[in-house]
Image (cartoon, rainbow, N blue to C red; front, side, top):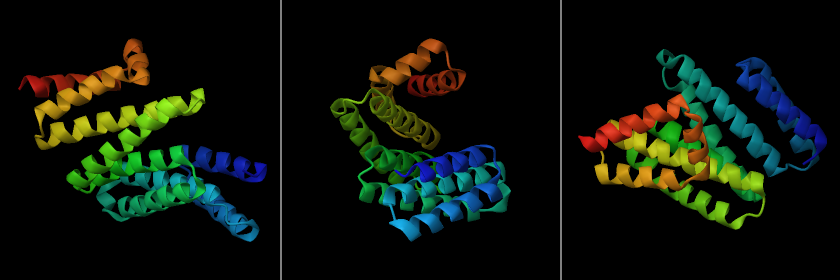
Length: 204
């Protein structure tokens, strides 16, 4: 990727995380204009769409009373990020976009069956990639996708009265995930809350 795009993408992510949405969208527009003028790189497009997806999702989370506008925008950006990543051959980029669609957006829209199915597909691909790649950082990112997918599915099953056996199976899968074991050893509170909820659900 061109170093200019790398710098701009870093700025875009920084502004999005700071919730400076107007600045983030201005940078996104600048990147897209330059990208199309040069070679239409789908990898750059995927990164831009991912950041816009997250920006719209954050806006919805901060102000759900505004209705579904930002949530619908977030879904469309995430789908475009996934498609562009696929064209670019960016396996991890596609995994992260699909993880967010299945774990964040579909459940918010009440599309629970679609969420569970896409999450299963995504965690399976993440597990396979983690087993195949020789890059340690990429392996760690793939483990993160798989872990998040398991947690997302647990939340969906618990909130919708799903199969206790499925929840128990997901807890087992989590126990095999290196990143989960690392975070669990550190006593991450958000993780403890999810695990306690799952255990209470299984116990009935």
